[in-house]
Every structure is written in structure tokens, then in C-alpha cells.
Image (tube, rainbow, N blue to C red):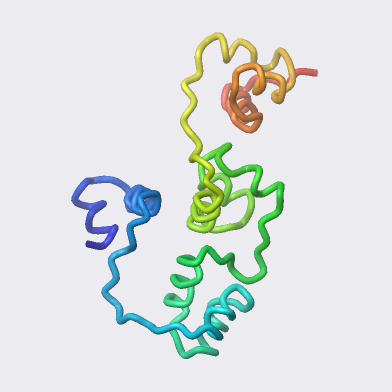
Length: 164
């Protein structure tokens, strides 16, 4: 059954179904015909845009993208830097995608391929909040065991000035 149909039945977001399916390594429901891929065609993935690979192979660009993602190959022109990788698991995948320019799906696939657990919601206690602004975000983060970006975002949300 397609992710969208299951999401509708469960009254949840389609991306929630997609993320859980990927975490469980369950293939997507496919109604399209199966395409055979030669070694030459697979070697093209990530070296050109999906549209260009589609033109070269005679396959639709959506099929090219699906194959590329299934093999955890980054899109053409995108390189995961150490800085980008360091963001994985420290914030929601959608936030990493926004900061890095990668799609949410690419961020999810990269995080999963590296075995990095997803970001978890932080239950901020009064004691944790009281530390914010008394020292650098990095020091607060280390003291309470969360990422510095989580402290930064919480400080901004609470409109607390940064420590000098």
C-alpha cells in the first residue's frame, strides 16, 4: 500500500510513514514497471543530474532518482562535508535539510547509512532552562547533555540573551 494511503488511514503525515518504513528497511509500494539497470547505468548515478541520467538511459528521472536513493548515492553536485555530517542527529532531519540544502530524504538516508540515531525531543526542565544565558551555549550543552544547536534554538525561542 502506498505511504500516502496508509498515512491517510492512520491520520498521520505521509513523511512519518516514510521515515518509519525506511527505518525498518521496508521497500516502498511500487505500481510502476520494474526497470533493469546495467552496470554502466548504475555507474552514471550521482555523476550527472537525475534528468541527464534519465536522458542517457531512456528512464524517467523519477525512476533514476529512486534508484540513486535506494543505493544511497548523493545527487550530482552534492558533497557531504564533515560539518554537514556533524549536524546529523543533533536536530530534526528537516532542519538539517534546510541548513545544508539537501532534501529531507537525502538527510534521512545519509543519517541511516551512518547509523546515526534521529534527533529526540528534549524535555526541558526548569534547571536546564535556568542555565541558558549564564554561560556559552556550548558549555550549557555539555553540562546538560544536549547539542549546542539545541541550546541555541531554545535560547532564541525564550528570547534569552547570549552570555558574554
